[in-house]
Length: 495
Image (tube, rainbow, N blue to C red):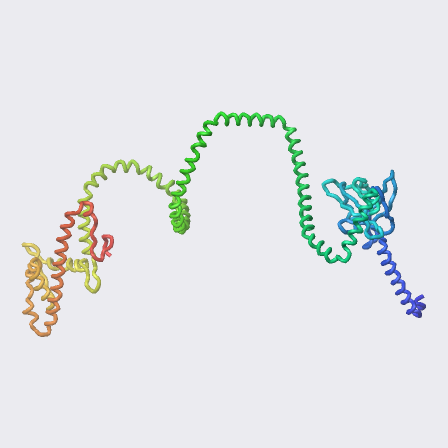
């Protein structure tokens, strides 16, 4: 067998090609003849569901000729067969499985697809709300319409009407002869009307649906009211009582309504008067908005501070206040007496504070303050009084000085009598005895300059102290209690 095929390989290939072409051509012919394979055949198989429709006449319906069932221009099946039952034609419709959703309110129309009366069934599957038609179910004759031929329309007319119609058609033919362009233009002008009529028809359809829904809702409402007649009667009686109360208060209502225009007028004037306030408050509130935003952070911080200090106030300050109450009550008389004495004590401590500040003040530069020299004065006083006899301590000492210092002593003694007395007790040599050379002239001049500045400062301090004393005498006692601060001293304490 293999050797025979190898020997006649060309003939074998030619036979295979012929067989393949035969299969393809046969499949094409069968597909155009609407030949369907059963559903168990993979890929190309399909299954159908049978439905039936009753027609008053099944004229030109020929099963097996590929007459189809159409929904919205889409072929969903074909006409399978026609039977007669009780004078009514029963047309079988084979619907594909995926389109087998036919409802009880479905309709079917027989229409010619071509001028040779190649019939098709145009179907409207209906709405799901009416319920699905069982498989194998039948559409009644009330939901189907057969094809109507022109001769049936003419047969319904009497002889005179047919004659008039014939005259009308002949006259129309003569009038339209050679006026095809004008007829076309005239029909084009009716295009907007058809569009508007289509919109009107669509809206009328929606209106019909709304009316239907309204009637349905009204029926439900009436049924519900009928089921609740007791509650409805009670509601009517309650409404009657309410209206009776309104009727009894009609004079009060009239009086209220008579006052209403005046009240509205007053409100109108108030609103007009508040317009200026509103115009001012708008910018003011806008400017206060940053402050409010900043205050929010402060309030949050204050809230956290209050949260943290609440335990201290509750657990520490409150018990302390309770325990200190008797002590404070006992100290109240002493505090009253101390308050009466406080002005004098305040003045005394103010003077003492001023003296302490003066002693503790350390001026800038190389010059030292009073405390520095007080230590040296203590040391020198001890040395001066270290010797004594039966009459008491004997003062001794050695004075070292320069030309400028001697000049300062003499000038200060001449300008200040108190200091002059002390300088005389020193028994110091005179400037002429010590500083007679030309080399010491510069020191003498410098000493006199320093002495003049010191005397001027003393006089200024003396005049300021005198005026300050006069001012303090005029001020209240509470103002005199304010502590004075020396230069270079802060808070009454030495720096």
